[in-house]
Length: 516
Image 1: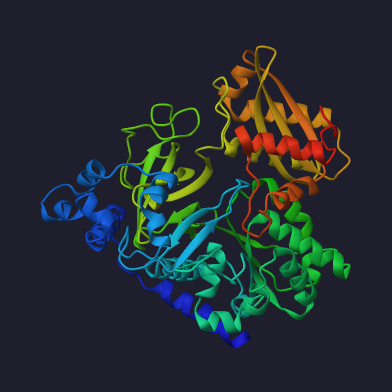
Image 2 (image 1 turned 60 degrees about the vertical axis):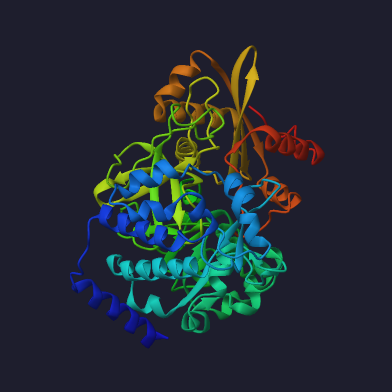
C-alpha cells in the first residue's frame, strides 16, 4: 500500500506541473447547457418546453432557456415528471430509464424526497471525484497517506428494489458504483459492512474492526463522524483517535457547516488533520475545496448548469418559496458577498431545479463559494434576517469561549408579549451556565448581524435558551425514522416540524430541561 500511495502522490504532482488549458467559466457553462439541451430535447420534458426549437435558432441560449423553462421546486419536478420514471417510463426528463433514486434524508422531515440518479450522473460524480483527487496535490499531504484506508461514513450500499428501480442514500449509490480498485484496496468499512441496512449495526461493526484498519482519510457528515470516532475511542480507551489510527491526516466533510463542531474535533484529533470541504447532495456532486484556505470550487464542466437567484425579499417569500419571475444570474454575472439560492439543470433530468441551498461567492473569479444556509432555514420574524451562517458562527464562538462541546442545536421563532422571540435548543452534555450561554450567544449574534442587533432593541423582545442532553437530538431523528450517516438535524424549526419536536420533548420529559 505504501507503493500505491507513492504512485498516486507522484502522479498528482506530475499532473500539477502541466499547464492544462482552462476555458473561462462562462464558456464551460454555456457548453454544458447546450449539451444538456441536446440530450434532453427528445424527452417528454424537452418536447414540452421546446428544447429543439431553442437549439435550432441562433439566439442567446441562456436567455431562451430561462424564458421557456420556469423554476421548479422538488414538488413540481416530482409531481409532473419524476413520478413517471418510478413506473418504468422512459425518456421522461432525461434519456432512457432511471435505474436509481436517491432518498434525500438531509433533515427530519417525515417524507423523503426521491431524486433520480442516471448513469450520466454517476459518471459526473466520478469525474468530480477524480478532479478532487487531482486537487489534493495543492495540500501538504504526505505521500504515504494516499495508500491508507479511506473510511467513508455514508449510507448503506444495500439498495431497496422497488419494481422498476432501486432506491437508497446517494452516498450508498455512489459507493456501490465506485471504481473497483478503490473499493478493493482503499475503501473502508468495505462492502460487507456497508451493505448492512441499519446504521447502528454498521457503527458497531466499524468500532469492532477499527484497530485492524490503517485509516488515512475519513469522509462524512461532522455530527456522525464525531459520534463514530468517540465510540471508537471509548471502546479502546484511547485519549484521541490518532492512538488508533496514527496515519489519519485528512478529513473530507460536507453536508453542514463544520464551524459548530470545530471545538469537538480538536479534542478528538491528536495530530494535525487537513480539513477539505465538499459540496455533494442527493442531486449530484458540485464542487470541492481545491486549495488551502479557499472556498468550495464549483465544477463547471461535469454535466451541471448553475444559475443563482439573489436570496432577497424580491425573489423569495417569507417561507423561502421562490417568487414568479425571480431574477437569475449565470456564473459570469455573480458578485461576491451576495447570498444566492442555487438552481440546477443536470444530467439526471433536473431542470432549473431549486435545490434549497443558499451560497455566497467568496472568490467569484475562481468560482469559489461558501454554503451559508437553506432557503427554508432562516429566521426573519421582524426583519432580523438571521441566517444559518450567523447561527453556526455564534455557536462556534460560544463553544470556544466557554470551553464546552455543543453537539447539536436548532432555533425556532415565536410570538411573545405581542412581539417576537427566538427559542434556542442546544445539545450540550457539559455542566454549563445557561444564563451565561444565553448572554454570550445574544451578544455574538448582535456583532455578527446588524439587523438582528437593531431588532433586539425593538420587535425581537427576548431570546430563550433550552439546554438539552445531546442524545435528545439523536433520539428525535431515530423516532422520525431518520437515523443515519447522511441525516442532519434542521437548524431552524417551523410549522409541523416544530410541533413534532416539542411533542417529542414533552413525551421524553425534556420540556423542563435547563432554560434561560
